Image (cartoon, rainbow, N blue to C red):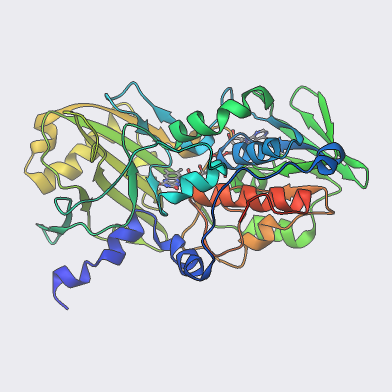
Length: 406
Ligand SMILES: Cc1cc2nc3c(=O)[nH]c(=O)nc-3n(C[C@H](O)[C@H](O)[C@H](O)COP(=O)(O)OP(=O)(O)OC[C@H]3O[C@@H](n4cnc5c(N)ncnc54)[C@H](O)[C@@H]3O)c2cc1C
């Protein structure tokens, strides 16, 4: 194989997070196409369930949204002062919104309509695919090689995952979210659940959906009484969860290709990629993104975000582009996910054991249900679409009937 062949699509696709999605794409090929229409409300179910949800990330919000569609009384308890979790974005760094966590849509565009689950609501979110002008650069042995970027991931245009949720999901659940409410204890028995927050305040319901990051359960932030089943505790303790960081840099000119891979940038212990964050946006700004998870995030995470991380990145880029990074640098921002107080990591590693997610997501005593990007059937994990799918699965288990119409 020559160098260009070796630097195959798979390598770059993995960088953009497609590897974990592959098994489910295969599964999806076998599945019947699904048409999303507003499902009917089951009034007997509406009267028999009250549901609490811990966490207002994509999974928790999708859960509350679907329950509300079904007329079920529910409330989200969120530790942070706002919603979104790992779909956080900023609209102050550039003249288009910058996704500080989830950025790409790793599945087909129709997934957005599926999340809305109501055909009377037309999703107008604009999405762009990488075109033939998109170039992938590979820096190896002191030389930069470029070739066409063939990647199936999609980017939001002047929008983000956060904006999509903000437009289509949040309006119907805004009054069901309670912020600055960190749940520290969950007690459950055959009659229902009782939650306790950091101030000792309690909340009761017939069922609970836990939609916090796996890392939060691994760190033992929430005490369960009785304790979770031992197989679930063991699976959570064993989980290989990657830390993660994103950095965005503005330059006065674009000297870099659409995506840039440095040597050894994708291993079983971590991944790193530079990419044109302004790709597909209506902007004159030149914004380069850095995505790094697992062992590949650690060198950046160890540095002072204000100056040292910038200098490290500029030196890395200057080597590839003959000093042009330092000459054209304007400003940067850093999002270190390990330092988010109620998230503390990026996600369950792409290379981790696929047998564990079904154990993470298994309900307990028909009272506790689990949703979130790692709480899946093990075919796929790590993306917002997984968080949304896990919400559908959890809601259907709570209610005992499908909420997605044929
Ligand atoms: C750097 C990075 C890049 C990514 N890139 C992509 C991408 O390109 N495409 C993609 O699809 N996905 C991507 N992802 C993954 C995506 O962001 C996640 O899969 C998804 O947002 C997770 O949603 P969630 O609801 O499971 O968890 P979260 O969004 O983490 O939500 C959990 C919520 O629980 C709250 N919480 C925690 N503890 C408590 C408690 N004790 N009490 C109350 N509330 C609590 C947290 O504050 C948080 O709001 C990326 C993630 C990272 C970090």
